[in-house]
Amino acid sequence: MNVSELSKKILEGDIRSASRAIRNIEDGVASKKQLIKHIFPHTGNAHIAGFTGSPGAGKSTIIDELIAHYRGREDKSIGVMAVDPTSPYTGGAILGDRIRMQRHAEDPNVFLRSLATRGALGGLSTAVGDAVHIMDAMGKDKIVIETVGTGQQEVEIMNYAHTVIVVLVPGMGDDIQVIKAGIMEIGDIFVINKADRDGSQKLYNGIKNMLDMANFKDGEWRPPVLMLESVQNLAKFSSEVENVAENMDAHYHYLVDKDSLSDRVRHNAKHEMICALKEAILNPVLNELIESGKFERMVDQLISKASDPYSLAEEIAGR
Image (cartoon, rainbow, N blue to C red):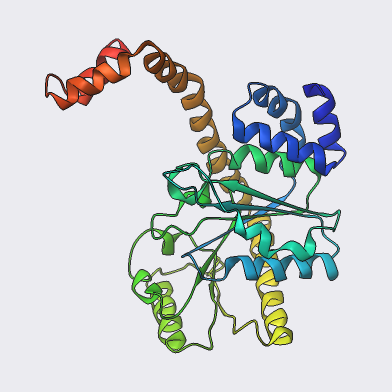
């Protein structure tokens, strides 16, 4: 199947074609750029939400119930991008997040896809941006990105999502994170999961105090702090997740009404342009250095202290 045929199938919402395209993007197949060029004019319609937080916070469980809400009550078409960590030794990934959402696997209006980080910083795979374009072009109403959960520096999600949901859990050190810069500053919605645990009120108060120090202006979006108790009480948990969905929708409508959505879109577009420039300019140079053996010789110079990284980089750049 050529690029033109593949893009046509994707625009028709064909899941198998979309899966094939995302696999090609992950594998770095040369035709991926042509594919994105074909579908890009048809993107920009979906509400993109990003879930971030520490490992074990329950992001997948919340998203699983969120899918049920959007499919059952609102009949929305959903795309889910679950990013899983890659082993630094084998390069493999368990892709367990998709396993947790298997009850939706047979729904033709739900597209679940796992991506491995492959060493990417910020808890996201470098293929996420293009994969989101694929889902957007398919006609998905909502696209949910679940990050790895690597800790405080996991702020890369703000370069892809319109709405960022930070999931925190009492007793996992998240009460300390609320006074630190980074991940706590990107949240549009804060969710305290497993709120029936000890320490939930302390965590809640910590987030509230942090938000009080932000001095929000009149009419400005103030991130809500939502509490979710154990999934063991499924009816209550479903109701609480429904509240999360309502706040996600409210935030998106706020962005649209206040003409702030264009600011987020511009921010994300700048990030995407920088990534594209790096791929077009840096990667060919780096590949050439590696293939010629010059890269290893440069590393030898660093180890022997015959040169320094800045001098070598300037030499390559022709400065």
